[in-house]
Amino acid sequence: MKETFRTIYMGTIEWFLENPLYYRYLQLVRDSGLLGEDVEAQTAHFYVYFYQAIQRGLEEGCLHPYPLELIGNFLYQDIVAVLNLIMLPDRPSSDETYIQSGFDIFWDGIRAKTGVDGAQES
Image (tube, rainbow, N blue to C red; front, side, top):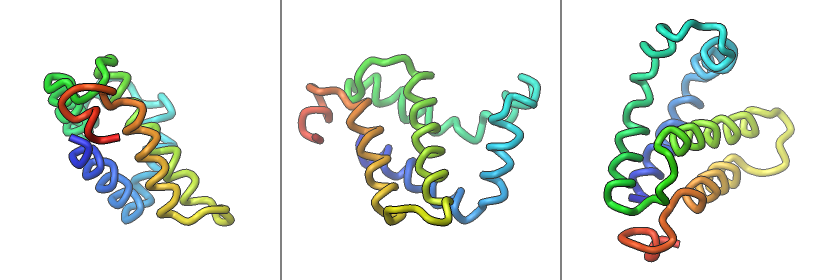
């Protein structure tokens, strides 16, 4: 399960870095609350794989039983935090440091402390 989330996390960051205008669009328009609920619902399909992986992890007992929506929002906001740091012109750390640290913070926060994947994947 950890590798599933690493793949989602890394793939999303890589895609946004390759498509910075789309990332800026999300930050300025979609995430600002300027769009109506109907438009947000239409664009939510881009994140369906986040929620499918979270649901599977919850069902398998690999994730701490936090609310699905909360885990999904933390995943997205973790990615946003990392991207915002990477995109700073004078950042003090390397991109790889931010990316790996961001994933570690996310994973350590959601994984089950005991159980199927949780105990073996510290």
